[in-house]
Length: 461
Image (cartoon, rainbow, N blue to C red; front, side, top):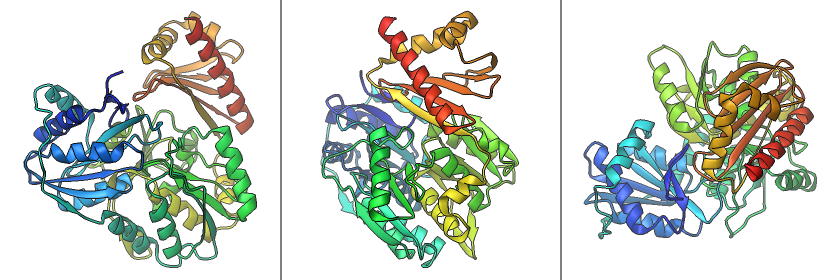
């Protein structure tokens, strides 16, 4: 499948992301951006990223290239925004190492879906030639780390013992450094020089078992980590239980004093049930849609934030904490939810588990069918969406339909309160399956059941 834009950036097989193709998309991107003389470039730690980053630099078309090296995606975005420059991050995020991608940033933050369309339309009309570029290097990660050390303060995490699951996330050194600077006792483990695809939205049973073992072994108050390019957080409580990303988002929004939330339709309905926000706007899945929703709220005299079920958090207003201020950052970020929740857990009784216990008790589970061709997944979801009788057969045993939401894929709410959601991935041959219920065991059980039915339907379709 040829590289294409999905929920966040251009993605494809490494074998298809040739230097020529990457150069064409970068030139198309620069053509649709305002004129300028700078291009910021960063990358994650997967094996193909250095080669692709060199191709990106070679397509700068006369602009000076600021090479930020391997660093978190939000760190690159922060540096480029400060310089008033566009940026390209080479990353496949959480997907396997045989795939990679490009994330494009305007001077003010993530590109929009309209920008994606303009880039795609332009890409066929520009050259894919690589030319020598004027390259300078900058330590953009340092400014990103300082952003959070300055905001939270040196003692914000004192008395906490925090484990950092390093694996191959590009944030592993920065995250440990920031936690230590905030006073935490940091324990580092699981470092890998081979790229490991960690999906914070669908944490595998094997990973969950490892997290439980590390909590017991290292006696930590929480374990934290991130996906490959560190725009999606992972946090556990002291028992090793993974905190879902949308729950992290809600807790972070509360800690920062946000009054409005933009989040995809797949996020936990606990957000509305909490009563903590005066407005919640639901979007399609993907950070460009969340960014568009935040823009919609920008004139409403509110304090908006955005987040997704994967935990990526977008700060849409200038936050304040103890007289210290934090500027908006309109791209998915893993550090802010990790640090906000840990700081709040330290100051309140019961740690992270105590924060969770005070929320409305709605639970989610998610997983994906890999190697599910997009056309077949789309056909399955389209067929179910358009025919009530077909849905009745597919969802037999789950009860009566209460409502159907077609915002992104097929999301069915049943009279019991159970919610089941099927959605073809926008950037990989996968079918995503989500469930929400009153108990974690029910959400997991029903998600597994519908995952099995979807697998059978695709195999026999």
